[in-house]
Image (tube, rainbow over all chains, first blue to last red; front, top):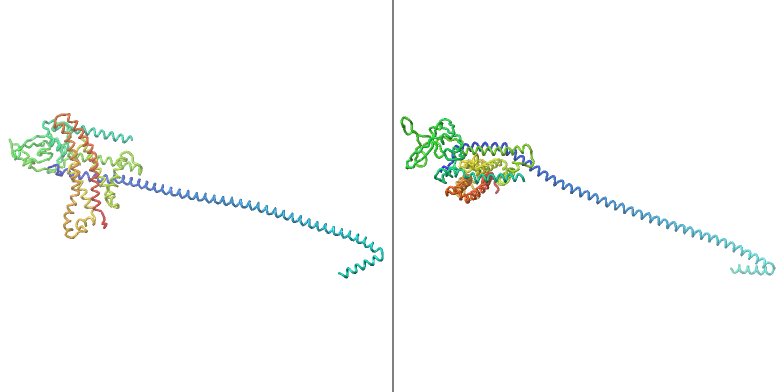
Length: 164
Length: 376
């Protein structure tokens, strides 16, 4: 029976020792231990958060870099294209100029030729005229060598004029 | 890896000690002739004013603990004055004979019967000398007892166990104080998961998130006090091996602490549920009041009985199994009794932890119910 009956002396000692133990442990053991564990947990949580943040930042940075690279590439392509266009333009221009020049030269040559031709023609005309005059002089001289002939000619000329 | 190995070898040592040293009290009892299993076991699981180490009941190796009694002034003396006193046999009223130890020297005037101290009563004179005896009416002496505040076996065990817990926890606390918030090492590495378990799985899981902090130190103390003292109880030699957590006084006190914490933490919602249970008709509300009031007491009462019965039963089973050898008076029975006792001892290591965990867990549950806010 006394197995299940509490003993007063033991109860007093238990109360004393347990209360003291609770007080000492709470003040000198649980408080520093729990605060250290909490601090570490917080530190770990913060570190994880920071890692996550850094990862996101890295990703953003990478995306930005990619963007920059992409723009640079586009810019380079643009510049190349422009340069090519410019080169092509220059070539084209040169060609056009050359053509124009050639055309000018040809035109000049043609004008030259035609003027030369005209000059030659004029010359020839003059020459022919001179020759004709000479011939006409000679003919007229012969015609006018006799009076009758002179008269006949005058008549003939007169008729011609009249007829005109 | 090395630490794990060290732990394993420590465990092996404990198991080895358990399987051999457990013979001690049993072997001692059987040397005295008539072997009474029940008496031997009861003697072991109950409190005593001495701490028996080896040898026969009287005259063996024993640590005599101080007796402190208050009877018209404080009296302090060694329990040796009882155990080495006069063995007196008196007849009871029912004809049976009762044997008790009469104190000598500073213990004069007192007698020890079944580890209880009684005041002797003078019944007459014999050759001019006063004759004082214990008078038995049935099983128990009729005499008065002085206020006994002795350092009994359980008190000594309580002091040593508490001191051990204090040393361990303060060393862990020192580690954190010195190193700050770093990864734990040594004892801290082993104990931190348990401390975090009590905080998270016991306190946080059962008590409101904003209020649990206040109760963590109490729950931690309860858990480690029960667990470490349970483990010490499993080591069958001085300075361990007392049936401390299997003593009703200890479990009564621990359960009473939980009762106090629960009652003083109870909020309006908690008391409202006890005195005016919402959601049921008025006659039922009145009917529920006494039931709920009894419920306040039955919860810690169950805590008290559970721990007491589990630990005491563990001690009884191990001793009873070892007793098989001495009942049969044949060492060959060790082939049966030792493996069985070993199995139970290993199981008791689990029970030691489980009972500490359960006590703290249920305490947290009761506190949690007391501080819960209305949510309907």
